[in-house]
Image (cartoon, rainbow over all chains, first blue to last red; front, side, top):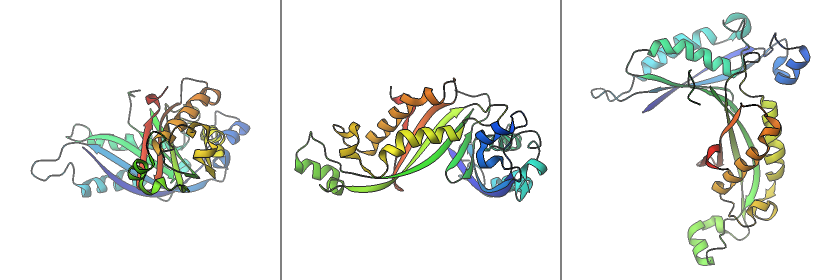
Length: 140
Length: 144
């Protein structure tokens, strides 16, 4: 069974790779390469896989999950400029893919060894673009 | 491995009517969707792509290329059209969202390698919201 909790944060970023030329960055990232940066209201859906506890009937107390997500994700990310203020985005391009992977890395230790498994992290950059990350190694 | 999903919209009209059934059976099966004058929807199409993130760019798919592919092969041909009379695939097949899913997947797969010649990204699935309450999903590996 999967349970999913949704959180939001607002942040700014620049999508520009130091390994590419200005022209390539412009072609690849378009307006997201603007050196002054721009922002989004990100929506993150974190799904856990587990079985309901026979006593509580819950896979995990959603309040507890919310507290973990607030501490691990919202507090470091919300109202920040990702490239300048939130490692590893001082060295990694803060694409939606890399944000999903970083969120996975921050959350995975919180669920390691427990009865619940981190199943997926979904990050909406806008309502029309989202990324699902299922951790590594990949099953594909 | 990531799955990146991009959402698009188009508006089109259709009529659900099967040539294999008589008028009465069509009316019973499709209800108001069988109205001879047709009717329309604002379709929401979600195209999901699977692949690893490129270490240089941090991206699993060049979304501008994906947008161009979907725009040229899907949106430009379906938007503000009558699916029954203007889309060749629906000359014989009923334009249900199931068949629309097949057609969209086929078109994307047929032109995929021109846009994404490498091993990744691959088309993973297509999801069609005919209305906010009627949603259809097809995996790319379900069709040729």
